[in-house]
Length: 159
Image (cartoon, rainbow, N blue to C red; front, top):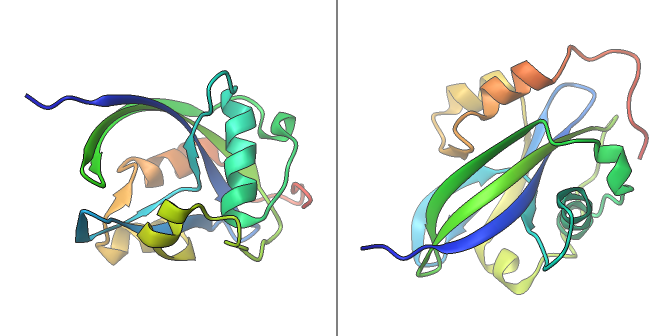
């Protein structure tokens, strides 16, 4: 029987003016050949609100600093189970959307485990992500983007 470590997380769908979403290419240190793309975000600290965690993780992983209020309410929540670095996790996660005109990613705030398990990053158009055949999480990502992101208008969030 698998024993799961419970975890709460907050993730950000960071979308630029061209409608591209920022994803990191990661791998499990215990399974280095298992590569996948995923959104910025991570675990909540004890007592931390999801929007606060999402803003903190965004700053640590991309260098982009925003007020948690700019993230609004989560657009989607789910529960996922996954192995990572020899452990199994059951993660309840909230997803937030943030539009930016553009952003030059700065990964200088990566933690040790992020430095050891993230191979790079890329801005993806949803159609290109599906066409790539690459593994990405959540699997519902293209549907989420089409559901929660209206077509790009002249109104954008400033950095």
